[in-house]
Amino acid sequence: MATTPTPVTEEVEIHPDVALVERAKAGDVSAFETLVKQYDRQIFRVAQHITQNREDAEDITQDAFLKAYQKLDQFQGNSKFSTWLVRIAVNESLMRLRKRKTSKTVSMDEDVHTEEGSIPRDFADWSPNPEQLYNQGELGDILRKTINGLPPGFRTVFTLRDIENLSTEETAEALGLSVPAVKSRLLRARLQLRERLSRYFRQKKESTA
Amino acid sequence: MTDYFDGQVEPQFIEEVRAHLCECSHCEVVVNTTRQTIEIYKDHEIYELSTEVRDRMHKAIMAKCAECR
Image 1 (cartoon, one colour):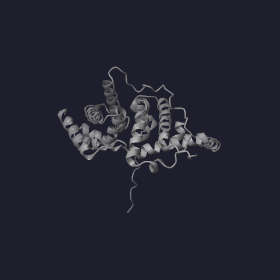
Image 2 (spheres, chains in turn cyan, blue):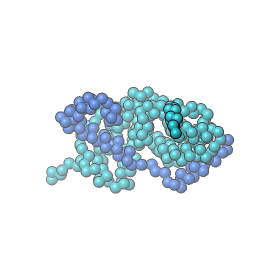
Image 3 (tube, chains in turn brown, green):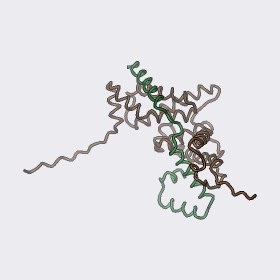
Image 4 (tube, chains in turn blue, green):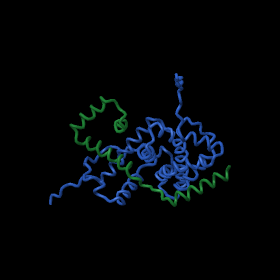
């Protein structure tokens, strides 16, 4: 029996998040709960990196998801749901920082014009490996302390791009910055972190005594 | 250099950087330790969320969402 060839149709691949958002818009709360479970850790980390405060980060995570739920109709699917959510969390975090520092303006532009630490001065290799030098707890403390020392504008770009693995374009979209601005801040953030970590990880010079 | 670290440059530029790194030990150290900086932050989750806190947050989020329906 001759078989009829299946017509070749061009299927547009829909991101699973878009389907979940559509279900949530239609009133399926469990679909939104799936999105919460998928992204809560990421949103919490972003908020904690920006605010440097655990309680604030928990509150912001809740507020960001609530705001996203209330504004689901505004999500058009032009960007990833996760990028849209991160943008809400970044705005909530910056608002929280502004409230905390009432007399001081906090924005993505704060302190980013400084060149301090962006010009390499430490040229010692890291040896032995940092994991061999410090235990997990000590290493975690060093990494937290070091990244917390960066200006918020640098810290946030590094967090989204290098820790959360957003693309440069997604980072720019989430922060309302241009792609060149993200690249410039990312390079300076990476160099400043390297310089600061070198104080802990640099190869110890042989004792001449 | 951001594009270089992210592997988003032309092969010719990569070759030029490699050639320079062979001759300049300072730049070699800066490039290597910058790569290590990125990797160490990728590999270590420095702000962990316990199961208890996650459960508490989920319940609070879903309760708030139910209120605004």
